[in-house]
Image 1 (cartoon, rainbow, N blue to C red):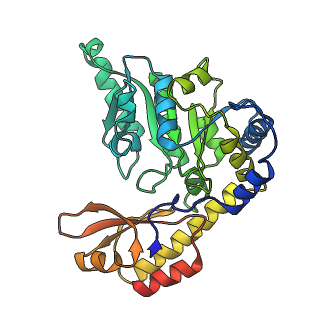
Image 2 (cartoon, rainbow, N blue to C red):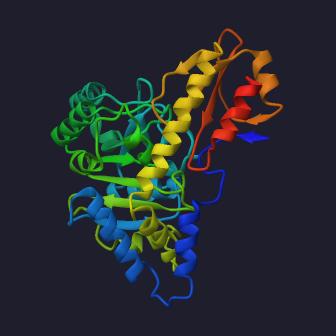
Length: 341
């Protein structure tokens, strides 16, 4: 079977495994207090063009989102996001389980607009019963979005400005951040994201790592005693090195960007194959997630030989599906898929 189900279905890029083996028998302290974790932090800071970032390493995206959001909110506050946001749809209520409501607003192609946020906040502030309501305490976005779409620098700047106006920290879920930044459609850099968000994470799990995400606080705003917060939620790794050593490798010699460029190149070739065969796009994504519309016959036929995600049924009986490329996608796999189309 060919698999285009996701970008974490293979293990890890060989260079990460090599680095883990090279450091395997080195004795290091635990809990992120080791020299390898400091080296990874320094390399991420260098890539961001900053030396004042606060960075910690966690194992997965849902875990990172829950810890980031819950640590920034007071008990009576909730987090604002687009109605298609990962925390609202595909995290099994992890945020709500932490005691905070997800305040989902209408989005467009997975994105939350500054105007939508401003209208919501003005309505909330004008409500005389606001003391009986969940208070908006921060804003969550993802880049790329769940639909593979990207915020432009202008859109992110507008959101940043709206968040400043209403006193809301802006948090970016970067599970696929490398693919977003390496897309030809992107007009942003990692440095821009540092300037326009209060915290974000750099995804490793979906960009070549066995596991792991790097959570970055950009304004000296990491909550006090953050290690204790992580430990209370069962997320503090004694062997933090397992994650940080992978990020050390990812941010050596541009590997993170090379992995991301490769996946984008494969995705653009895959898109061209589908469109050349007359398959309609469900959404025109510029990243490694590609969405197409299949008839029932096409869906049934392709599922015999290819693994991909069924995204949503459409009113006319057709189905939107998702194909995802990664560091491990090969030209041979694309050729085999082309023959099946």
